Image (cartoon, rainbow over all chains, first blue to last red; front, side, top):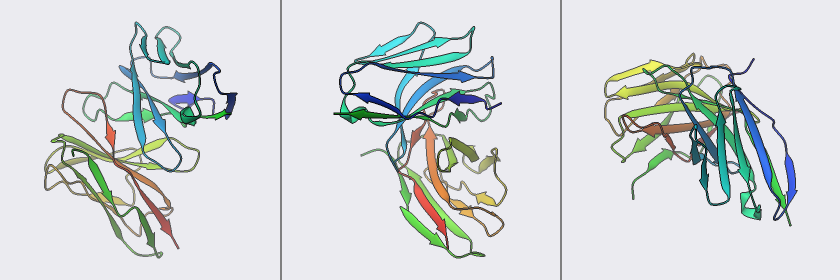
Length: 112
Length: 112
């Protein structure tokens, strides 16, 4: 089983739609959670951190469910510019290396 | 402008050759990382360094080597022992006591 699993998509949605992605992680001791955005042939960029209480940044809302070990990302009022691959990212308990474990990504295509 | 730079952007290698990928950061970050990304897959950790003159193997270190002689620089050498080196290579850095990693623009390596 992969450490971080995502539905690869693609999710094809019209402009203005609301779309939600889920991600599950296998290590129950994981400590930090993030969503990164990656445009085609570019580097990943941090979209937002995910906190237990949930957090919102404009049209984006992230939620964490520790009991079920899943993370979600909700995008409201989708824009064409939201088209990208969204990576679910988890930091484990290895405090020595503090490296991140990446999901394979969910591709979003927003259509006019 | 603070950031992470990687060079070259594209690199072509003949089988049997070693090549070195450059990664430089002026963010004064302590930790630096090398990841590899293959099409449709998440990032996988190759090597990481928490401090100058110290580095550790990640999950897929075979066929790679690194050095960390300066805080700002963390070059990666892809040796001829790496059997399938064609991939997108990403360097990242992170400040001590923070969770967020920032990525350079990446190097696309192709073996001819």
